[in-house]
Image (cartoon, rainbow, N blue to C red):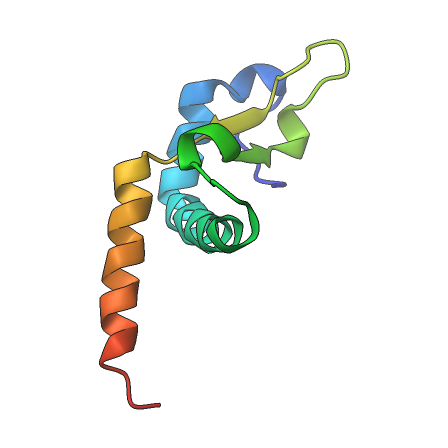
Length: 100
């Protein structure tokens, strides 16, 4: 992400990045991507387990990254398995009634 959160890398705290993620609805974006990957891995990996095989999502806020501070400007989240399974069930139910 190239979002501007402040004048230097100190403006890219975990709280500030989480706020930007929610404000721009990137949280919804990564939840949908997580569901898509969850479904893909379930079909591709024998004995797939979300907790073991899905490490989460990473968003790099480029303006907040610094070569001398590893992890600075990096947002990470692993959506709760219950959320992803609930979305999977919801979207599976919705597609069963679709006529197109």
